[in-house]
Image (cartoon, rainbow, N blue to C red; front, side):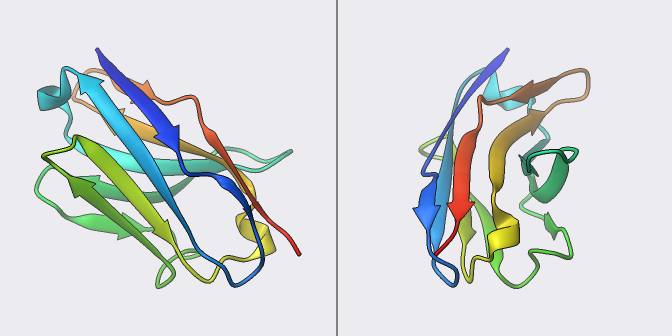
Amino acid sequence: QVQLVESGGGLVQPGGSLRLSCAASGSIFIINVWGWYRQAPGKQRELVATITRGGNTNYSDSVKGRFTISRDHAKNTVYLQMNSLKPEDTAVYYCNAAAFTSTNWGQGTQVTVSS
């Protein structure tokens, strides 16, 4: 079992930046892929970015070039640096940790981009 706690969300103006953090605890060694997902009101949850155990990253087209996913092994924390934020980035952002036979979700953190 893996426990995930997100932080760093908030209200930011268009063009601004935020950094989300996902602190992990528990059986972290079983995790193969770490990811960030988001869900806007009335929409399905969608993939934002992933990073594998080996450090390979993947991004959705909507955030490519603006967002960066990274992982600090010593702190057991995954980050999502979000730059050039747009109103359409407004959503609840969720951290995900996927193993071969299980997947784990955090509680989510709200990001609101508005002037």
